Length: 92
Image 1: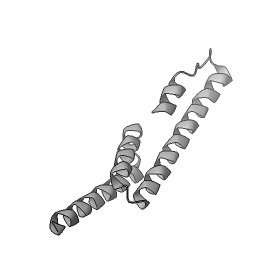
Image 2: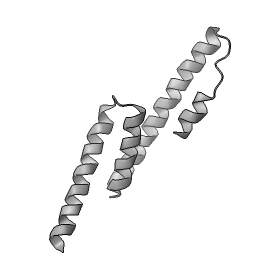
Image 3: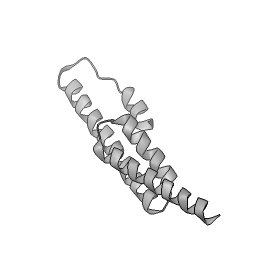
């Protein structure tokens, strides 16, 4: 979200090549931000912080609702959270 805020404040200028370059660069930066969030959430999942990973994948899905990897990983996080909750419930 921070990157989106910063990128939305970039002036596009009056047009021409500068405008095309800034639009391209903005899209490039958003994709880099998405990739970093995906990597972060996968690290969180591996470290068994499924709740934080799930929240990060939700943020990714808000940024790009058509990104299939985010939906798949989000489902995987939910599955692990249910499994952990089930183990805790059965262990009590």
